[in-house]
Image (cartoon, rainbow, N blue to C red; front, side, top):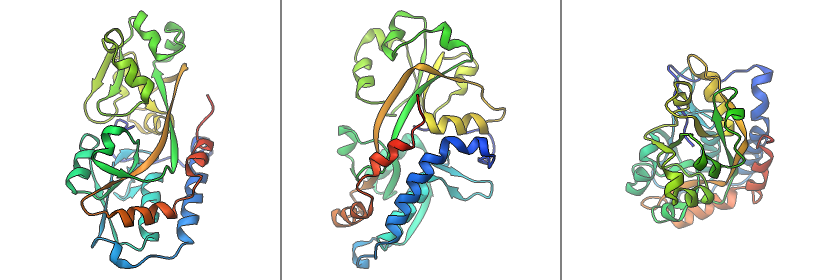
Amino acid sequence: MIPQKPSGTFRLSARAGDRAPFRGLMACAVMVWAVLSAVSSPAASLCPDVVRIGYLPDWPPYQYVDSEGQPQGLDVEAARRAVSAAGCPLELVAIGWPRVMSLLEKGVVDMVAGISETPERDQIAAFSAPYRREQVGLYVRPGDSRVYPLTGLADIETLRFRLGVTAGAYYGDDFLRLMARPAFRSHVVEVQGADNPGLVVIGRVDGYLLDVISAQAVMQEADPPLVLEQHPGVLIDNGSIHFAYSRIRMSPELVARIDALLPQDGAEEGDKARPSN
């Protein structure tokens, strides 16, 4: 899931209260880093001249650019550590969400972190073992959880409710099944480009689907900050999150090597990172 980019650069707060939602994710990332760092590198012949890791500059705390213009984030560091542990030189390349799969397919970038695996994407790229999980929530204007008493997304069919989603993003198989129903699809507004929860604030949509971890960072760092609430009736388990690899320059042997370096229980560890409902 890709959030709206506030003006300026992201400066994630160091206040104790702001860190709380990210502690579980950081613990998971530390585990990944520790395992990767402990394994020796393979023969350099498996590596291309440089592994170009594509990252999104506007998706904190997973992938973003800090106040000094440097790429940072949990996904960025996990990818950097994985490639380094495999013995390969790397380069970080800023990319935009709409072109992620196209850039992988063409070999413009070799690897991208933070991707859900789907049958359609399997036709384009290779995928790693899971290294974390993702949950998606519905964000509405303060007080609107009572105005729209939803117990699931299907309920919007009977309400005057406009649901904002990011075009091309994956929200789980249940959401795909709902989108096949004309009565549901008529309530959905697909937004091109990055996630844009600001549309809720200005009344263009009544709710927006966002990753529950990145949503907090986006709202805190927007200028002015966004004030939204997470609807208690809608929480989507978006499943496992992976590295995606271009098949042009990332050989199956190198992909398998990186896979072998990942903790075998990475997805389960990611469950601990999810905030409670």
